Length: 429
Image (cartoon, rainbow, N blue to C red):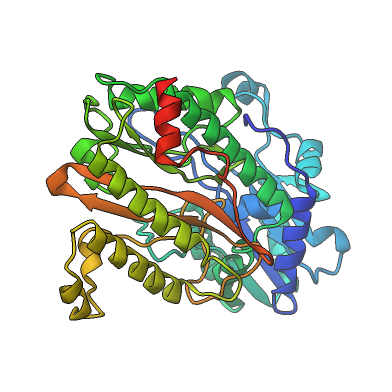
């Protein structure tokens, strides 16, 4: 891992909060992600299971966390199982956690090697009545492969059919939606690294540059600052490409007169940031481009003001839609009388603003959390309105990451330039 150690209090406190949500005499098990294959003997880069990391800070494959708050022996109430290293692994793969290192990182006192898991787990299951198992439950997730968690669920239910089985996911959705001060510190670091990358581009972008060259500049700056790299597939979309919401080819030439939509951000310590900015390729927005840009910026600032304790995502999105209608009418893209007569279930603004304004962000870019839950202190949302006009080869989206506090929204990306005039000034330098 490139990132610096995170305070183990984060994981200790997370486990305490999780344990309080369990039924009496319950055991919970969290598995690491698999290392996924490509072809031949190739593998993809390992990314840890977010729930296991949230509860332990362990960032290594073939790891298991067991939480059993009511275990008869206190030492069995939190246990880590890790891949045991040897001389061969050390030569070919490098260093793996020692038991002492794992305890220092996680705060878990008892650590076994994976070879001992089934023996130890069998003894614990003889004590437990309820079992909490983990799955990736997300509205937008479509998982086709069998994960390590899925294999473990099958094993447990076949081996121990008479236990009462429960889902850990609802608890994790509740807990992970509220970020602690330690998490905010890590997320702020991800945002700060993103800022460094973006500022570097202000002196790099010019007519003739390729989208992938911009991607390379960002990757270099992110990794130089201890990030693993991009928090998600980077979108570097010039001209008409900006109207493709998840454009990731990044293979076109940036031409004078076009605007580049940059949805690019760094991760740090497995936590994501999520930024979108738009740059004029030649350093100067046209009058029309600036009109659209400033319209989006006004919607964004209005939306941020609504990210407050007690609001909810449904009412929030409806209210943001109203702001967008006003701007689209002002831009001549919508007719006021037609808007007044529109079907409220199919608002006309959706032609130019087709996605939602905000989503949870944290260990995952589209982080877990209930859309029916009222906004609370400690939640972090993106704010990303956009206007897409294919007939003008123009797409403008602006995005920052916003922390909800009792005193109002706090922009974790407040230091990143966003005013059109400021961007032009910095590019001119």
